[in-house]
Length: 129
Image 1 (cartoon, one colour):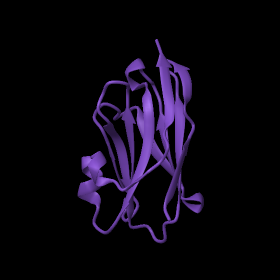
Image 2: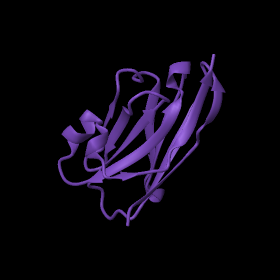
Image 3: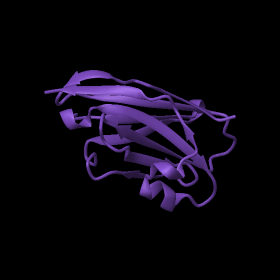
Image 4: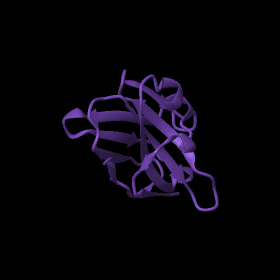
């Protein structure tokens, strides 16, 4: 049974940084894609970034390129999303999600919520101006 647990959200001022973490359990092997999404009140869920563990490829939405990066703790099956130079428009509930399978590069690149099967409970990020 796959479980995802997010952590690391909080409140920061514009220009600050936060690191979100998503710990996955229940996976054997590395053929799965893990993505981060965010959703602000009244807005649609938006893909932020993705990593396909099958080959290590990563993708980031244009809105966060140059500010957000990935790192991982393989021993703990944890993917971190380092968020720098945060802006008020980054404020949202952030979710991690996974889907397993082979050759998921295209899925990862699309960062589309309907393609993901397992979801965490979310962690809130608030950036004040």
